[in-house]
Length: 345
Image 1 (tube, rainbow, N blue to C red):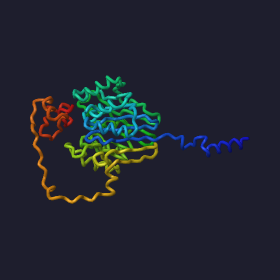
Image 2 (spheres, rainbow, N blue to C red):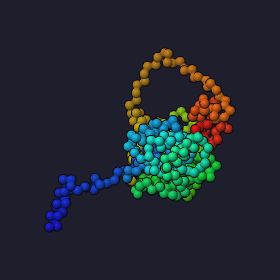
Image 3 (cartoon, rainbow, N blue to C red):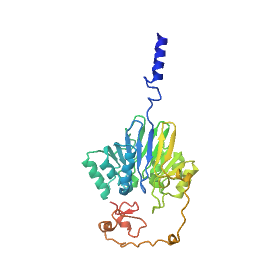
């Protein structure tokens, strides 16, 4: 009888009446570093099907970010994290919350006076989203297969970047370190207190020289580094020294300005990296079109109609999204959070 039972069980497996071990296995983890121009946005799709969005780029990237989330099948966001209240991290979250149900919102708690931050908080209140300011080492319970912990948060920081929430996500043997806009002082703090080694590092502050110090990179020892920034940005991101440090530790660097959307897939042991452009396109370089004589003349750049404004209200009448450092109308006194962007909403 025992032999007959074993035979019948084997037969049922073969013909499909019972699930095999492979068909019962869980889905993998997907972490998407979304191309939102000069900003940050990271979508985490966990093995159990839950989702978490960390930052959302600027307001100008909102439409594309919403489109990306829909393309990835997102119906609901279980967690939304604003690492800090700078416009290039939270601006796009307004459009996201208008288009998707969000269950929990995690905030740095850093007080900010921008209209963008005020509008975001108002929307969170209107939609009755659970609002939390976590503590250091708090765990975000997204999936039992994942460990997501807060390694840094400081609502009393001297500036918004210093308040950045730093997250470490561990999926068995594959780990991710998401640095927000954390600078070298925060890097020094967390590397002396915690295990910061990670398979994938989303570098702090878009690859700026204010972050990604040599001691920190050497301790993280990432296999993959993600630099999220916009093409031809006025800040000089990413810094060449940062790229050199990543190369020195053997990290494979991906850039949203070059590779567009970057997706890291993990089964907990192995990982794969795919990008939506850049590397794939470089395999078949296109033949340049012949240049017409009329095209060789340099385009005449129109001069700004106005470069001095008494206050942000007046400036936004001409430049609704504010202006960046290096723009003729930029004034440091109007850049209250000292993030290199004046009068952002």
